Length: 401
Image (cartoon, rainbow, N blue to C red; front, side):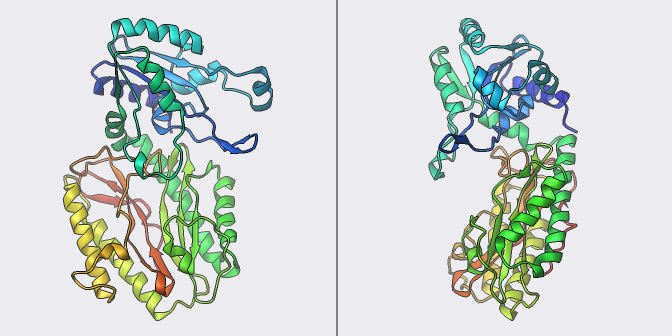
């Protein structure tokens, strides 16, 4: 169970990583959904990791020199208080383990004073992969960064330090992720059992959503992918509206959020229990590649070697299926990464390591996508790196068609 002690320990770790520095972080702000309505709120993962606060527009100030922390409550109008409520100070203290809670004006005065004794302040800088995104970033971290630039001579990004800390999962984190995975596995088993009774992709999505909320989860940790037939060749397909066709396979990529942590599991099943010979061959090939790649994982394994070995396995798999020659571009049929970190975020950073370390949790998700045949197959498991090898946390879910 995640308690305030967990967040207190995390604050001590970032203090140590910044050599007793001053750290200031912001929660995310609410984002517009339509007209005068906001999207359901999702917290910035680093802020949650350090505070446990799951409300918008809060901030935390951590003075590593003095070992002191303050939460900064947002300014909430009477109207918003009536309609949306707010997090009471006493509950914020209970969740975070931080007793001192101040207003935004008090925080600005405090930061001005701290700038006299701290030339450097640490916060979140630009996301390193932002240039690849096709969406707008939440404005709260950037706004805080600019505010700090006006007060301090040196504003430094501590995203990398936080990523390295978060990459090694603590026992309570592993327990939380295992619970999220167990719930996801149970939902998959129920969906597979009921799949022949469904006609549309959205029925599958609804079944997952019902199972998750019924069992206390926040809901999906990211938009579910329920992609039948050729839809599965669009990697981030999320319309989930198509009608199943005869001999369709349906690729399901599902993440749940439970207790602050995410799962991420993919399976591909036939909609009518009558997969074609070609579908069976591709599915078997993907599953065999998955097993081989999981077998690679152990502590101390070079990330570069892991990537090279995984690529070689996928190239061999595609050659065996007759999809490419030894000189062909395997990314035509396998265009995404083989793994990513998993934790508070579905795509958790592993801190850009050189080697795999015990306590890291990563996905293994080989896939083959053949648009001309209308076949898209991905099989994804969640893997814990242990002291002696690895543990497939989602092994309880069969990969069989």
